[in-house]
Amino acid sequence: MNEIKKNIQKSIQAYLCDKNVHYAILIAGKWGSGKTYFITQLMDTWNARAKGDDNSIQLKPIYVTLNGISTISGLYHAIWKQIYPILNSRGTNVLKLVFGGAIKAVSKCIIDLNGDGQTDDLSGTIDVESFIKLFIENDKVVGNRILVFDDLERCLIPNEQLFGILNQFTEHSNCKVILIANEEELALKSGETNKYYKIKEKLVGQTFKFDLEVSDSVKSIIEDTNNAIIANNSNLVQDIFSLSRLQNLRSLKIALQSFGIFCELIGDKYKKDKDVFQEFIKNVLTYFLISSFELSSGNTGIKEYQSFKLFEDKRNDSSKKDKYSDCLSKYGIYSSHYSFPVSAICQFLTEGFIDNLDEILSKNMFFKNASQKDWERLWFYSNLENEDLQQYVFSVRTNIAEGCIDNIPTLLHSAGVLFRLNNSKIVRLNKKTLLRDSKKTIDSIIGKATSPYDATVYFSYDSAYGKTYSGSGLPEFNELTAYCSNRLNCYQNEYREKICKKVWESLSDHNLDDVTRLIHRRHEILGRKDYDANIFSGVNLRIAANRISGLSNSAKVELYNDFLAYKRDLHSSLEEKETMKKLVQFLRQKSKSLKLVDRDNILSIASKIEQCITNDKSSEEQ
Image 1 (spheres, rainbow, N blue to C red):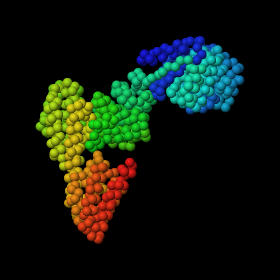
Image 2: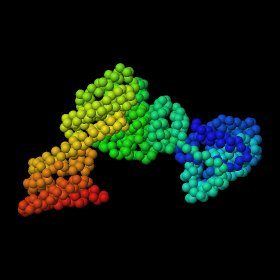
Image 3: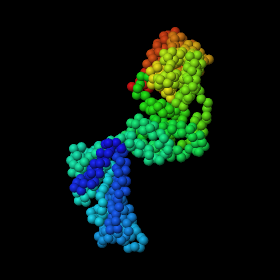
């Protein structure tokens, strides 16, 4: 427990022991800050000391949540529900001795006073308010009269009326009243902040600001789970919770409870190899926490976390940086594609089940015992002996230098682990030479690619093969990924121009289907990154106009219909608009040399292309 909490605890204890104070104290803090948990822990120690003799009743601390209570009678009934078990635990003779005949004045059947073994529903027969006052003010009810009222801001009784009732307990019944509330929200109930503080000063003598103290509170919550997996990964849990920026311990409790339930669903066959299972479940715990915290904060897009995005450029957009990425690297967490899909975790958190859990587990790479590459062994270098480490470093460095790597993801992993080892001063490598050789290997891989969608050039900035890149965040690695992205963008542009030139500059009746495919599937053919990919990229528009005018009239009608469909689904880029304007000019010029139907069809196509420019969706949305 930190010093602030210790001081609050001492102050509360002094308040409880002082018989001359007649005011309440307020524990104020944001929702989920752990204030209720803190007080209920203290109540456990107060309960342990509560004992009564045969001639009295020892009153234990009474905890009441005011959440949703809208009437004064409702408040008294909430207190009654906490008092009744205390009465019911005492014998009939004790109750008669303590209350005498007065008890019948407020209740016809509060308990089995007649010894017939029967008790009844008291809700319609008891004057609850009168009995509570009788009970609390009775001198044979001994011990501190501690009333804890929680969730004041969620109580539907107006503050002025509520505080007036609570004040009766402090002034007339000599009770110690502890209030727990989110004071910012409580003040809003009064309409005006000044009005709230005027009401408050009549009741509350001390206010203790309770701020979330992650370390102590999280440790207590982890201990309370009685889950060995969670306990063994305590530091990981604390770090993920801190990175989530949530100020709500309830979210942490919910996440850990859900994880505990999930663990019970995993079959014993997956737990046979303890080392493998421990590594697997640590990864699952990580993504359970991330998914649960993000869903709690309203981020429904977490289902797409770590989803693959081709050619996504994150270099100049710090807002897209994954706030958890450094933590994942710190604890050696695999990508969720490798360990356990986030989408399945989100289904469990929102719906309570996973459709194909056993199928997902049976196909999981943790349980397949796939042979590791040398760079993979270096990824978990802390498990290696010195000789093995040196051997794998030499092997990976040689593969890069000799251009033996045939795909970009492997190259980035290989270079990344070496940069990381060098940065950690575990090995010494020439960073400039490693960077130069890595760039040469990238050039070689791209040079051999058949298209931008070749598996050898697919890469993500975050991870591949279920592992985040070890070099992420290091300057040399950032330079390498930037170089890779630029080279791929250049290659993709060249590829687009090659496709477009071939389609438009060789257009005829026989290959008109190529234009149809280009128009209707342009995002797939020209690249998934650019929704507004230019279908005339690199095209000689004069040649294209001549080719269009050379089509048969039936083919011209088909082309007109293609542009009609294109218009309905168009978000034009500025570049595409400019090229389309030039094409329209060439088509109109060409129409002057044509006659009759030939001329009319060319002008119709030109007009339709113009409509694509002026009426596209991007213009409408702007």
